Amino acid sequence: MDQSQRRNLLITGANKGLGYGTVEKLLSESTPFHITLTSRNTTLGEKAVSTLREKYPNSTSTLTYHQLDVDSDKSVAELVSWVQKTQGKLDVLVNNAGINSRDASEEAQRGVVKTNYSSTVKITEKFLPLIADDGKILQISSNLGQLQFQGETLRKILENENLTEEELNKTAENFIELTKDYNPLPYLPEPSYCASKALLNKYVRSILPKKLKSTQQSYAVNPGWVRTDMGGDNALLSIEEGVDTIVYLINSPFKKNTELDSKLVFERKILEW
Image (cartoon, rainbow, N blue to C red; front, side, top):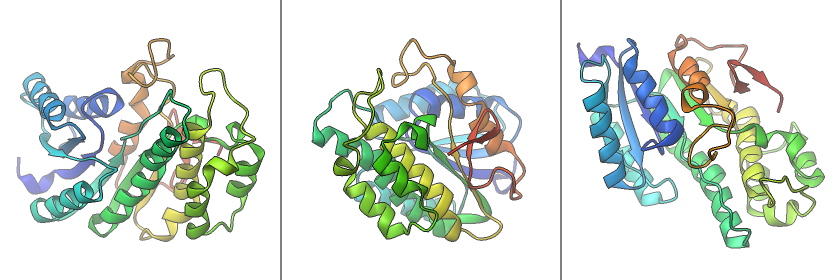
């Protein structure tokens, strides 16, 4: 197949879990993509690519690896430069890399918000000039980012429809102070994960649309509670079930979906913020 017929797709944090499952599903289908799989650990990422190539030798899609640590400005810059030189543009950016922490220390909590919000936003902004005119951006989020799971202070801030980008970033910086009224969940005793996804959802809802062309689209995607290293063995959904909405949005026509654009999407439908 002519390389120009394939859409360029890049997915972060894809050596395992939902990212890996998304790539595998795309390779198993007929729609042709040129997929770039990234991971922080080069050895694990290259192994993932090798395994997938062996499993799907006749895929209509191609698969390439590039290292990426989303928390490293140098790593992000190198990836963006490489994509620009080798592909010219991206048709689909899937920001899947994310973390959770069992550590309740302030340092650990700040790490969660940095990776899941600040670094995810930064890589999105760096890639914006390379997103195709009809391109898509998918931010892998969570229903735990819904406003109902936030403390009253953070919830009121994020409910403000006129919140500026500067104010949103300032909220992320000050989230420790702003989440003191977080109501602990049995499986999330501290607020960083919920807050990080709520901040990301607000970015998709209110900030990113102003930066995109009228023909481009973006989504926050809730994959559900999935049996991955992060989700744990007791999670309700298989990886195959968890990637369904992600793959659905990737494969949907490259024409703005006015119903789902800039929304939080779960099971192919809108989920309340």
